[in-house]
Length: 531
Image (cartoon, rainbow, N blue to C red):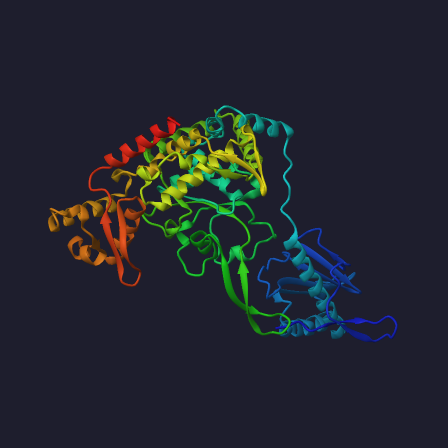
């Protein structure tokens, strides 16, 4: 409900007048030096907000109150109440009576004090949201080392070496994630989703966390549906890296993060109470920030994979990685790891990340090379490839002469940048049957066997639907649909027609092991080297 106007003493008339709100500059008598113990004094009353202002829902202001007289030493003269909504007039009236009776103070004085506290806390919460994130001081030595590394002949190799010194078990994977996280600087960031056993993925991601700029890192085990809509500070999500350890929980409806990743934006029309009128009104909540997500799953299919901005990275050789992590942990417990070298590499990698600026990238090589011979009509992988090429180009910005344009500055893609993107993310372009989970691989083989029996002579041109093969494969619709999503993501099958209502028709993309794809991949590499 709406809060009633605050009444203040009129010095001239000695009466009360109505004042709509306090001027935004007045925080007199509100002590916020300790955010978890906010203190407000007025006349003979002292009010403490225990736990600070944690309520980020703008239509309410719930706090835990402690109220007592100045100079009081008796525990009986203290009033406490939790989850008091200072925007709720009924609660204000109730606690006014309780405080007045407990402390033996006129109810009008108590109510006026509560109104004044409400105005000041509302102003405090609003201003706190406008504050910027704290600036982390950087030692000059790291800045110089970072610039020297970015000007080295091959920054990718130099960064991979630093990742090794920083304690990264799989430096190739670490370099992939590090590069993807740079996309936070652009208007359309990329997201990484590891596919591996949960415990191993958790450890691999945790190794990378200290190597990312801490002021832009947002690490969470879980995230609520509306977390993006109510940031603690105005620029909290701006150009940030979100490391999320429970991506499998992002499968519900009305999830702002899932909306943002699937659609590249989050514009939500919500209904909430107007604190002035008390009526419900529709307002639009829009996320005006860029977030690059790093997460993981042990499922064969995840809803995030529907996004054209998500890079699914299968983690091969899991047993070898687990052994490597075990050996490292033993050395760490035995005191054989040089923590100084490790921390130095981590801070250097953080500073390298900070030194990269978002600059317009132009790729003149597109007119000289035919990418369709390898990517075909796979627009998602083609888009991901070109965006990864742009990120590698940004990593070389300290080595290039910037070209000035009417809108700013520009750098150009070099042939070796395109080669590095192909080789660094090779497993994305050349996905093999062996990389699929056993059950998905089994489904793929049985689909090919079924089509071979039904259309032996024309099997390569045949199409099928989920309904066509479900009975033959003896699989549930939900499981089979999930497997088809995964096979489509791996490029094993393609949609030819259909929609969500009537169902989709598919065709097999790879009847044989991908020798043709491998040949096209090697041919593309050769053409790039010849430029």
